[in-house]
Figure 1 (cartoon, rainbow, N blue to C red):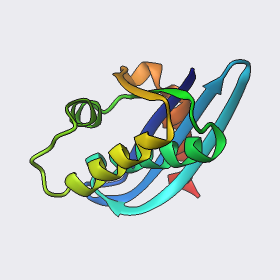
Figure 2 (cartoon, one colour; figure 1 turned 135 degrees about the vertical axis):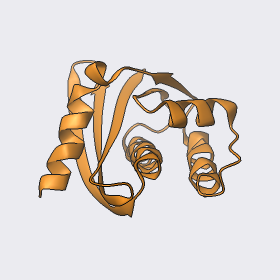
Figure 3 (cartoon, rainbow, N blue to C red; figure 1 turned 180 degrees about the horizontal axis):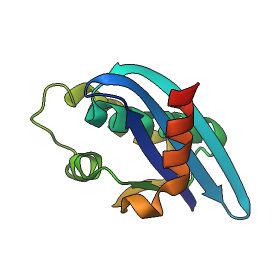
Length: 128
């Protein structure tokens, strides 16, 4: 199982946004940070998950993924596979489509303090 931690950082809401992705596989760790452009904080959290799934699709196809996020909106939306927010619909659909590349994907909400690596990576992308 691959543990994938995602987080987003946004200055303003909406504003400049970045994603941090921290991946653990056995004894290896992988770190990624991306500038996302102008988004709301919730959109940026969805985009962080999408980036993480895209990375895992290339690096770990067919694996079991445990996506961990401190965004309750993202975790709840993906768990239900439903949103009535028109802004989130295409983001959710993109996430659900990416799931086809893996044997199983599950989501877990984690508190901010358990997501420090992904948070650090997202913040560093905003500083660049």
